[in-house]
Image (cartoon, rainbow, N blue to C red; front, top):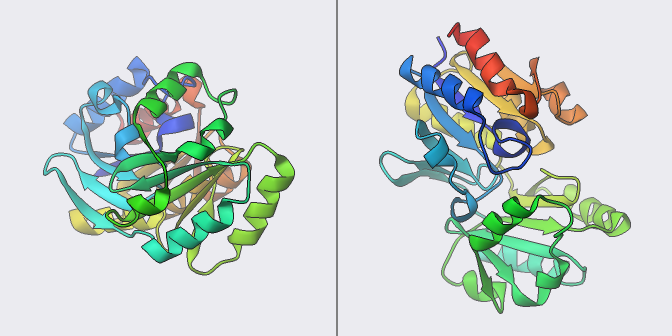
Length: 272
């Protein structure tokens, strides 16, 4: 029996516009929830830029946010699990990244922050306008990220670099570090969390909390940052539109997000 379904958002549960959930996916998750499965979203986003996903899918019970740096219980309205970067660790990363023409998002305390002097590097031409408008509406612009770090724990840094050579330079410089998880959710992004903070460890923590085994868990994703949770869940599904790495990590494959792949697999496995 499936007791928990964990879903990535962009490229997975969401339509290609990154904003809406299809009626087919909504109906399948409603039926699964009625049948006793808990619903969790596992996203690279933080809470302030989550959008209206919970309004579209009110059955969502848990949010694994900032690539698994924290787990939020929507019903109890409390954080169940957190594995944040230290202020010193995050500050050193910011000092290093300051030398690149990159737009940087700091996720801290469930809030998204942007630094004023980096706003000109925002990749406006990469994402749909509605998604950009939604994301920017949830961001707080500050003069200096270091001021934020004095009062809030840093969940994640996301670096957007459109220059391929500079992207590779940053990736290669940070990827081998033992104190970091380095992954990506979009071709131009680099996601940085504390070592041990990923969607897989967050899903494991939630399963322990609920008393759910990997064999009772489904997980869906499309990008590299989804791989750890797809390996953990017995019913790990890669989307047809997913990356090659994601497909290698998953036991199963479903249709693309544009073809309601989540609904197809949920109905098949749960016989709904």
